[in-house]
Amino acid sequence: MGLYESLFRPLAFRIDPENVHEKVMHLIAAGLIPGSSTPLERDPVELFGVRFPNRIGLAAGFDKNALAVDQWHRFGFGYVEIGTVTWHAQPGNDRPRMFRLPDDKALINRMGFNNDGAQVVADRLAKGHPKIPVGVNLGKSKITQLEEAHEDYRQSFSVLQDHGDYFVVNVSSPNTPGLRSLQDKEPLLRIFGALRDVNAEKPLFVKIAPDLAESAIEEILGVAVEMRLTGIIATNTTISREGLQTKDAALVAQAGGLSGRPVYERSNEVLALLKRLAPPEMTLIGVGGVFDRADYLKKLELGAELVQIYTGWIYGGPGLVPRLLG
Image (cartoon, rainbow, N blue to C red):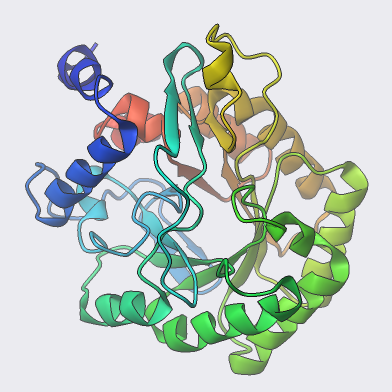
């Protein structure tokens, strides 16, 4: 057990999760946490015209506002996905809105896409000098009506298009009312049609929920093929609480998306299904429950060409990526 697991994590886990997150983000953005000065080159790969020094990225939700976009290579990440970013700046849901379930190596969050807004994030990215590829995760503003969602995504994409190596349409967070209904065929076609009208060349992905039925996944895949999307990210957080070890019923009942170890098996099932059905040129990014090297290798075996971590990094600490890469 390393210093992070034996000393820092037990202390940090006594404090409100979001408060810890904000303090850690401040330290990382300021370059105050030791790390490597150069990207970690392990099994580098070029995909959709972008070179990745390794296949492990930081999932969206950690650096929502691109505050530390120049720093993530220091911890071994091969790329970072910032956001979720919405057209309108918004505070998100009321606190507390993030909860730890240590017995399950999991988190519940209902953040609600709190972010500084697309224009502010675009300005910040324009001033940055990241050493690894940057993805941008786009969401719908809470104040935007569902029938106008495509315009909300289009406006964000318009100002951010020059500042990301790839872009993700997030229609699978459970924390914005009605958002998951945008995973249906017609809304998805409108959203991606609007983005293609702005820029037909940028790599585009859709991030899907683990709770979808196989028929719904097949329908989304059909949209992805029709709109010539670069790929699919599988998966977001789950609304399921099945099989949890945590005994605190009130904690388990907290509203929000569950991430971490409990999502691992279902996210792998979705990934395997997509690999079986998707055309070979489609890039799959696997995320959900990666805590050790075996988890990482399993995602690759099931068809992921890139992998992302989030909750595993919170539990495993800043040395996790090099351990995953071996």
